[in-house]
Image (cartoon, rainbow, N blue to C red; front, top):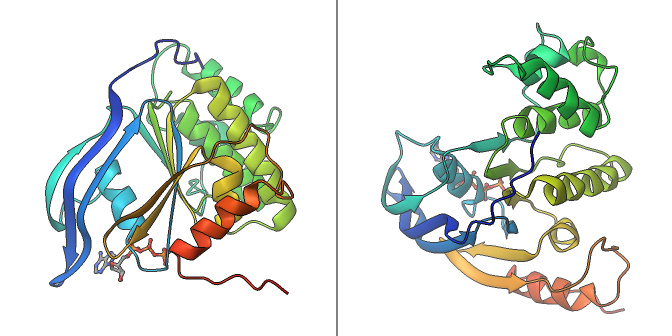
Amino acid sequence: MAPHTEQLTRPAVRLEGLTRSFEGRTVLDGVDLEIPAGQFVALLGHSGSGKSTLLRAVAGLDHEVTGSGRLTAPERVSVVFQDSRLLPWRRILPNVLLGLDGKDAEERGRAALAEVGLAGRERAWPSELSGGEAQRAALARSLVREPELLLADEPFGALDALTRIRMHALLRELWKRHRPSVLLVTHDVDEAIVLADRVLVLDHGRIGLDLTVDRPHPRSYRDPLLSEYRTELLGALGVVEDTD
Ligand SMILES: Nc1ncnc2c1ncn2[C@@H]1O[C@H](COP(=O)(O)OP(=O)(O)OP(=O)(O)O)[C@@H](O)[C@H]1O
């Protein structure tokens, strides 16, 4: 996988007045958003606030949905979901290579698996992988396509706490090496502030808070300076912290 060497100055993603409704109910109500190329962004919001709807719109996966507005996204977009969506009847390497052709595809697939720590597991079946390993394979399948934009919808939501922390480090490492723009949907405020350089809160169909997290990486959950960001984000989500 070659890193993106060119530094693009145009925004990778631009939403202008994006609306989406279901059965007459407005979920996205004129969202305006620009994500510069290479930026790592997290999107928070209450359950049902429209995070996945926004992500699906950017991914171009919502053709049948009622809506309006303008949306610009890069050509090469990869999506990672909460479940790995590996095909159970294919081994790991063919899963990673799905839909790819070209002479060097296999070599790239093997390199991607090595990058996510799955060297030697190319011939394993998806059922033989742990949840964390399956998500690693899903990341390899995304990154082997050299996306300009990586969309991730709760990719670590089903993993145990320790595996999540390892996956955070891996995702950040992969981002550093390949520099796609990232839009990470999560429920987890700590995940957002540990990983992302900008955190958005979706509220009543719009971006209610747009927060730049200006702390060096790697970040620790225990960093007291992150607690100000946490408080501000929880406030935007309407959660009052217990100060006892
Ligand atoms: N295809 C659909 N048909 C009807 N309603 C839908 C559809 N997709 C989403 N919705 C509704 O739109 C609202 C926003 O859903 P969405 O999945 O985007 O929220 P979310 O913020 O991602 O939620 P969660 O955090 O619980 O995953 C919800 O009320 C949901 O029921």
